Image 1: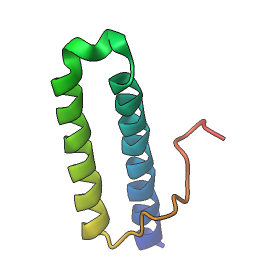
Image 2 (image 1 turned 60 degrees about the horizontal axis):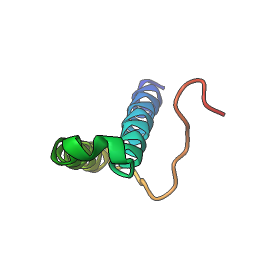
Image 3 (image 1 turned 90 degrees about the horizontal axis):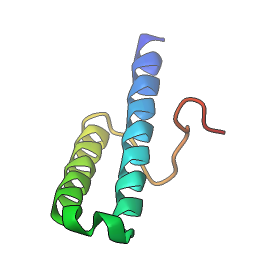
Image 4 (image 1 turned 30 degrees about the vertical axis):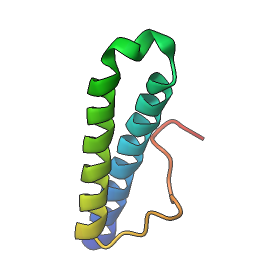
Length: 73
């Protein structure tokens, strides 16, 4: 049971990182963020790296998300 609980927490954390990633991608598409483009791209790359490392470490399949961030339906 503890292993399932930990995996669930890791999956939830990845879903939060994915939400941040989506927000950064939306900001990259908006003109008012043009001055911060390089910073946003760096943040996006860092989040991608973290998600991939976590998925690899915990042997998670990210091809189909199982859960959404808390409060999102």
